[in-house]
Image 1 (cartoon, rainbow, N blue to C red):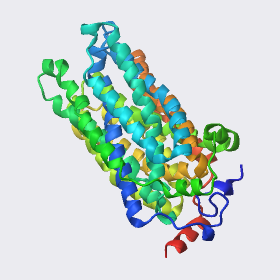
Image 2 (cartoon, rainbow, N blue to C red):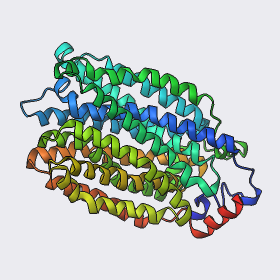
Image 3 (cartoon, rainbow, N blue to C red):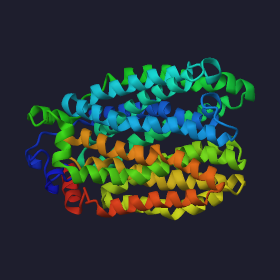
Image 4 (cartoon, rainbow, N blue to C red):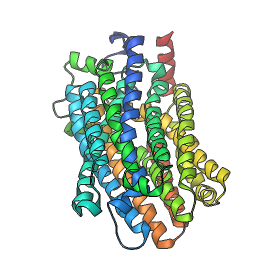
Length: 455
């Protein structure tokens, strides 16, 4: 496919010269799109991250009582975590088709509702001791529903912002979407941090349910907020020019196979590393005797610090391009893989905090800030939702979905973090290679044109 046809929507968009295209969304519409996407991301990913935290802390004991080694139950619980990721590409395909055919807004309402219902049901689910094998089966089925919703949420959220934003600020504004996801994680880990203060028996008996049940109020709020947002300006233009695809999932694979593969590569290592930093770190901390409150507190602080880093990085990509910034983040995964586990395993509070800040705030902050605009601009508007849904969510399965289970399996076999550090470094290397092979989606000429347009 001709790269110029999809190059950052600046030199051309749908084959229409820049000067001939209609005006972009108004400032108020952009502001509404950003606010709606961020709040939706907070609520949606609060729900999705709850499972990862609960899998490390309680699900192994309550739903997957396997053998005498506590790590065995945790591995089984992370298996359910992985199953949710296996559903994400299916959700990405379904939501991509709906989003490219009928619009971003209606699809995002659907993802939020599905996520909310499944999360609330998890909080009300009887345990293995109460209903036997039906408990883990139902838990996994609900996790699949979460995966289907998550498979369409992220892409729709960044597109709602990116396709409404002025060209000169797309990187900066699109970076607000992962910031919302980070706040969702902070809320989920903070909720578990609060209920963990309960006596152990009460926490295992009913306390762990409260973060899940409490999500009902958040989802109602999210649905109410999303009703007010307008459809993205770029997609509205696609509909007006009758340029939409009837079968976008098939068309994107036929017309843009390299771009979809590039999206996969850019996401693969980043997704795998992120869930080692998020979910596996809790299990590893329990294994080596680090207080769960240290890990959860460190995760909360580091994810809060990720937000200003990612916003700054998004702004930076508007100035120097997407690719060089993303490459720095990819290299950082490789560089910190060994020091991360050395610091985490030190048993000293400040070193544990430093490890989590280095991994989440800095490394993931760079990648999360640069990724939304970078991968969105690889694909044309009328196939964009489907292309992101396929490429990014397949990478989420093979990278993010498998990484906590693989890392926990390596830890259980070798009883040490060395092999996990090698695995983490390999994930980073994949991202480095993919970034090197990717084209720059916002080159100097496009940046100059965007600057002139905004003046």
